[in-house]
Length: 514
Image 1: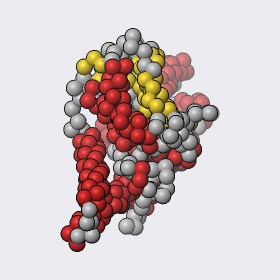
Image 2: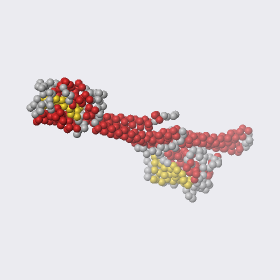
Image 3: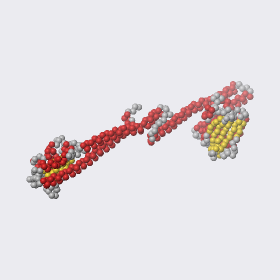
Image 4: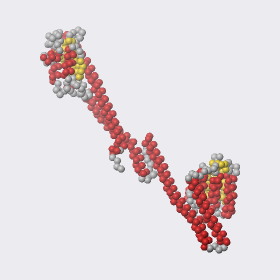
């Protein structure tokens, strides 16, 4: 199935991280700009207020000092004020005055309109008409100034951050003090940028810097998001590739990654799962091979005695055997092959019970020396017939083992039978045991030709025989040692085989003590 890039978790994670970083950067930049505009506006209002107050006091003081009439003082009084403001590019000061004859202090703004134009009316009239100036607010502030009230407001009605356009209207008292002189005029103070509708250089420079920094931070955040998502998605990509290979039957695939945390644990768990699955598959393959081998071996082991019994039965029916001796010889062969079949069926039944876990051990204290003596007494006729000497060298004073005596009898019977079939006439089979910590190590040694080295790892497998010819005269079913291993392991022990230099084969196993 084809997957588009926008479905990839890597790009989703990268885009999500970039989006969060961009939103955070934009929010931070907006907060900075609004904060700068707010505090810059406060500072500008404070500067205008201070300048307006000091200028109003100076104008009032100059009037008192020069003893001039208001009607002729506009040019001389304003000149120092305007010249003083030229050094400050951000401020413009204008002055509105009342005629000397106006003893009742008529409103200033109508007087400005009817009388000779002053600097205030010129500036307000020459302002760019595209600028949004709230003239009603200016008029109201001038009117409040004629009543002795100071007003701080904005010329316009809002605008973008950093575009505050404040102005200050301050009353002018004769002599510079409201307590000692009458109100003679108002002072209108604003910034050049407020009248020009431009942004102050400080705010403009800072805004550009914040914008450039925000773009740089956004690019760095985008790059970091891509790299960060790569560190997460690279192990996931390896896991995805490994799962595809695993699904296609490559059970030896493993994920090599240096990731830590949850991703590292996920890769580790995947490797363990793949290893366990590989072991299970190999075990299933072995089981399948064993099943095929089992069918072949059972077919072979059953066919040989059945063929002999069938042939001998036909000879009896056809009357080939005429004498009593012939009948007895035929009967003995039939009995032998029948016993062989019964032994094979019994071994198969025992293996089936053990593999199914249905074998119930009846544990009790058992002295091995006594039990081995009983086994050798039963097998004595077979040892005499083969001219092989059995030897039990197990010390009677060894501590007893906790085991099932019937199962141990089967173990020693199978081992002695196996040793007897591979020991030539005149040889010896020795059974010995030694104590080691909390267990006994039991050894059954013969004086035969030993076990081929390539057969040592497999002699405990079902139906395995070291002699490849699989001759039927040995009488073995190929299950004896497999049953021995199953019984020993059921008791909590282990079994192995080795060759003894100068002797033959030795099979050893352990049994736990009480």
